[in-house]
Image: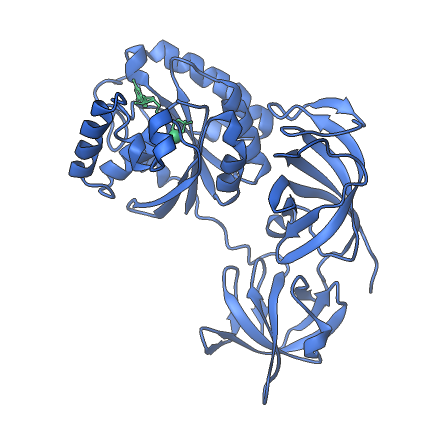
Length: 418
Ligand SMILES: Nc1nc2c(ncn2[C@@H]2O[C@H](COP(=O)(O)OP(=O)(O)OP(=O)(O)O)[C@@H](O)[C@H]2O)c(=O)[nH]1
Ligand SMILES: [Mg+2]
């Protein structure tokens, strides 16, 4: 399970990750002790747990996280790849990269401060980027003397916030912790006798396993196409949704070519069917090597992948040197395709903290803006509505080597090719 740790600057994200790694045995005590002494001698006392994650010299000197870092730790049920995100507003783009890789998130909020600017922004981005499961750690409870009343105030504000973007407060765990003291991290601590829920580490095992969407139509975006003598055309790729079976009649879109699955191979062994997550090569009858290429998507003939004439998207602008306007044509990265697409309409600007409409038909968008836009691909491309096939509905927008925006497709005007 990929887990992002998000929240406002200084609220204790790195400390929480370091503490969880320590409590689960992923980091030994003598390392923490070494960091404690070194941090103290450099005037950075209390950063010993954060330093497990903050390895850069500049991060340690400034006492902040700048870039995302990945670490692994294990609980009884899962092994987690945890991504510690920076809270500083200058590094939101790094947080977005981290969040876009995650299945679930821990939102860390310091009890003395409560909901702050990047608490709101990160919650909205997490939701936009498709993180559906979230656990909230109300941290620094030691700094408010483990006061139940303060915890409930912060919990109330957070409930309103997460509800606004579509999380369900009633189904979300709010855990009072002190990551510095180790309170309610691995086991419930005596400091909060009023708290009846699970401690943080056991709570992580309540996350649901990322689904294998086998009940959806088959979608396999092509990564490469080989021609193997004696066998024929062998496209390779990862099954995102649905099931691929031998004998199935398939369509490749937007190439608009049909074929029949003759055999499926994974790790050099023939298999009767492939399910989501499987990386396979498969032999198709009726398709030549030149007929299809990377970026085409394989699906059943009776429910072929959707080719967009144009689509409506909800985007968040991460960084743009000036202003994003109608006519701008950067490259959209979606499943295995990279297609230049033009922004043809800016429908509305949204408040990134609430998702509410802020302006109808804005003339431009700039860094930090969230918006609903119309996009027209410059050549046929497959994209799906995020509500139906989220794996094929999210994209990143890139230009000149950097990520300009991230978003998801919320409506499609299909191109009729068949
Ligand atoms: N009192 C108290 N201080 C804490 C606690 N957790 C973290 N801190 C302190 O808060 C400061 C910031 O901690 P970090 O873990 O670096 O915070 P962060 O959220 O990772 O910060 P950024 O990555 O820069 O956004 C450090 O001085 C920590 O010692 C806690 O439970 N109680
Ligand atoms: Mg940090």
